[in-house]
Structure formats: structure tokens, C-alpha cells
Amino acid sequence: MPASLSGQSFEALALPLLPALYRHALWLCRDPFEAEDLIQETIFKSLRAFGSFQQGTNFKAWVFRILRNTFLTSRTAIAAGRTVSLEEHVEESEIPAISLTPEEHLLRLGDQASIQEALDRLSPPLREVLLLCDVEEMKYKDIAEVLNVPLGTVMSRISRARRALFELLHTEFEGKL
Amino acid sequence: MTELTAHAKHLESEEISAFVDGELAAAAADRLGAHLEVCHNCALRVVAVVQLKKATARAGDRYVASPDVLARLSANLGGEGAESPGARRNDRPLRQFSFRPVFRWTALAAAVLLAVVLVGLWGRRQPNALTAELLDQHLAALSSGATPQVLSSDRHTVKPWFQGRLPYSFNLPEPNALPADTVLRGADLAYIEGKPSALLLFSIHKHEVSVFLTKRTDGFNLPEKSVRNGFAMRSVTTAELRLTAISDVNPAELEALVNCLAKVQ
Image 1 (cartoon, rainbow over the protein chains, first blue to last red):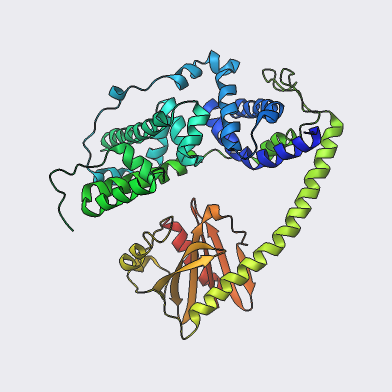
Image 2 (cartoon, each protein chain N blue to C red):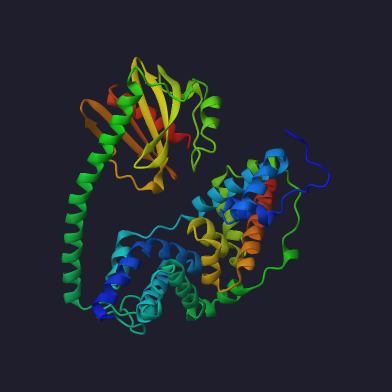
């Protein structure tokens, strides 16, 4: 593929994704300068590897995977220990069974500030899968490709992430009473 | 509604999440749907997860790239001459990329200017077609033969009618929170550029008002204020919705109504 044609195709695919890439990078890095650097590096690597991208498959999942892998191997992320936390396994036992009624769940969802705080406090692996599902609106199979995990793992993580969020909201709600 | 039989169990949380995310196969989704018809507890759990999903999407969407950041990022998408990682910017000593040569900034500035002009030309055409469509729907609602699907001033009747008809929800203010002499008359389901929209019908004094509620992410390009064929139009956005009101009433009163509706979303 001629260099100029491949460049145009990559740009047409990547340009609409820049806001989403930046949003997700900022969630990973928690620093705007680092996030911008992360995306610059991701763009560079994606462009270099574009020849291996299979046209017709999900470009968003492909480039998000590169973004994530780039983050995991970045010097700052390793130094901060964030890669370990992102790759940690979330044990089922870490999420206590809560006995809220559905009505009580609904009561806690009206407080946007509490939702944001709970999302911040969620463990990184659970937050990451929830962001890819609910914010980036990816299908489970695409999330599995980004995270390089089986589809079943994605399903169980999303379910556990939501249960964990309900538990965090319950804790915050009780604390405010 | 039949009682949940002894051998039927409640849904697993994974099933509920997959159902809400649209990831269940059709047959499994049908079975789950049948269970929800008879199980109040699971139905509420589904509602809770739907609301949590929406709340998470709102909370997770808080980081927005500035135009400067987007301009810098998109400058590298062309590929040719892209700087390799490893060089450092003088003003950010820990960063990995060098800044572009000066001549590339000039080329970038020219490209951005051209893009702005083209987008401006394209943008001027699109809102005209969209405002025309909305005005047509408003006029159709005014016609003597039109009967909306919901004829009610009760928000507890109007709002639930839209459940299952729209991929989003909205709130309605209490009657005493509406501007003076403003009454909810009814509602209908409209389609704008093929996408479902809530159409709320109000009256302000003796003037009829149509308010279209669409998803903000539908990308409708509408000016905040405009006038077309003697009808005023006001459009505002909230976190998730765009509200567009049309009427021949005083524009200030129209704006007061649409702001009142936006406030409760």
C-alpha cells in the first residue's frame, strides 16, 4: 500500500477517535501531559503497524489495545506501579455481597458527585472494563480484544464492576446519613 | 401478572448486565424478557443497572480534549515526517517527542483555516434543512386533524408513555415550576432524520409550542436561536439531551420554557 494512501486511510479512521482516546488515556494516566504523550506514542506505533491492521475489523478496538499496551509499558506507568494495579486479578471475594433492594440501588443513582467518586475509587481493572463498555460503548468482544482476555472474563468483570459500584455508592450514602 | 413459580430463580447479575448491554443472543434475551414480565424484583434490578450504566457514562465522560490538544494530536495523523518518540520538547523536559519544525506549523495553520472555512460552509447548509424539518413537524402538530398519541397535562402520564419507545429518558418539571401561563398539553413520538425523538406539546398563553427532545449524541447541528417563517426556535443541550422548542410565541417566553425543561434533566 502506498505510504500516502495508507496515511490517508489511517487518518480517516483515527481522527474521529482522538477525543475518545484522549478521554481514556486521561483515565489511565490521570495527568493531561502524560495522556497527550501516551496518545502521541500510540499514534506513532499505530501508524507504523497499520499495515498489519485487517481492514473491515474494528479499528477502535485495535487502536485502544495499542493505547493500553503502550500505557502498560510506559516508563511513568511502571514507575508509578499503575501497570501492576491495572493487571491485578480481582477476586470474587473482594466484592462483598450486599443486600440492597433494587429501590435502594435507584436511590443512590441520582447523586452524580457520588457516582464520580465511586468510579474514582473503583479498582483499576474494574474501572477500565466499565469505561470501555459504558463510556466508549464497545461490544464485549471488542473489549476482550483490547484487554486480551476471554469474552467470559469481560462479562464477569463488568458484572463485578457494577456490583462494586453499587457497594461503593451504598458506603458513601451511609456515610452521608 | 403471575407469581414467580417455586422452581424459577431470579436472574444472575451477569445475565442482567449482558441484557442491559445488548449482548445476549435473541433467544436468551426473549427468555429473560419473559422472566422480567413476572418478576418485579428482577425488573427493578434491570432498571437499576440501566440507570447505573447511564450514570457511569456521564461520570466517565468528564475528560474532554481541548481544541489545542486535538490540533496537536491530529497533526501527527498524516504520517509523513511524524516525529519518532525519544526526542524531548524544550518546555517539557520529561516528554518523549520533539516539537515540529516551524514550517510545519505554517502548513498546519493553513490546513486548519481551510478546514474551518469548509466546515463553516457545510455547517450553514445542514441546520437549515434540520430547522425546516422541525418546523414542518411543528406545523403538522398544529393542524386541526392532528391528534397526539398522549393527550394529558399530567407528567406522570406523559413521561411513562415514552418508556420502551425511546433509547433515553427525560424529566418533566412539576406544573407549578413551569413559566407563567404555560401548560403541558400532551406528547407524541416524532422522528428526526430517522431517529426517535420525544415531542412534548405545550401552550404558552394561546400559542402552541413543540419541544423536541433528542439525544445529544445524535449530532444534530442546530443554532441556539433562530427564526424561520415567523416561528422562533430555541435549542439548548444538557449532559445527555438536546431540547429544541418551536413556536410563534414571544422568543423570550419560549426561551424561558426550554430553560425550565433543561434545568430538570
